[in-house]
Length: 416
Image (tube, rainbow, N blue to C red; front, top):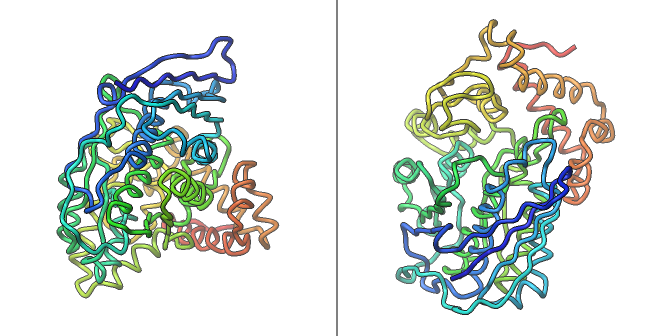
């Protein structure tokens, strides 16, 4: 038994929140596929266990999107090889999680009694040059579509809840073998959007890559959501594909796995419209690919019966959240619960608040004259992360300016 102890302190709490859970009982992982010929070892099993424990710890506490957001999280985790974490893995994990959540995470590793790797199946030896994270979203599907010429040496990797069949169907229609799929069941916890899910996704991609002896891990995410600049402080953007997060994860892989796994995002400096257009250009039959892309999922509230104050059916995009707004700027046909092109929706302050915040921010981007002017529009965290990533502010500003033009064209706006 591997019991994890969690202690969370919020900004306004007098007493810390303390709970515990058991890996393998309260967190159950099922692999729907076989790993590469090298399989899982003790270190790769520890990496996945820690990532799953992080996600469960976040889901246990309700305050991540409130005024009483957690400020420190301590995880006591029994591990098969705790030395790798004490030597640098814990600090790399803390850096990655600060980027994702804004909280300080402290991992306290201890020696686990049973040191066997996680139960898993091993496949036959096969040549894999790259692993692509494949969620079934528009960006990952567009990226895979543009990489079909390398399908024979590419392994798609997916984490699913309700998307298992969709992911397999999309992969088949693009000409790929079925993706490696994993499901993580958090038992008694209700479903909740998490800031740390990408830690689990990238950890899975890394351990699959290492099982194949592969060093290239690809996460396709358009540049607007990858840079994750909040248009106003009230909108909490996920930094699931931020370049600073990717560098922190590479350091974590090196420290814990002892293997170099490099993360690439070929879409980092592209708008979502450009991502889709690149995929369509790579295909002879654009119409068939357009139908595949139309089936992908994007919305923050996809499986909810509401989306930012707008009623909709579960399994439908809301049309009002930031990812839905960005998706609408692409040529992909989509069905939204609420139509921001309609005047009555646009004039509803409850339904259009994210749209109006984004429009106001993009207007200021258009008025900025250079990288310095763009820098002054960024929130404090974005300034720190842009500097840490070594980004050229002029290039990032041009990316957002291009998106502002696409946004204005889509929603029939004129910048003044």
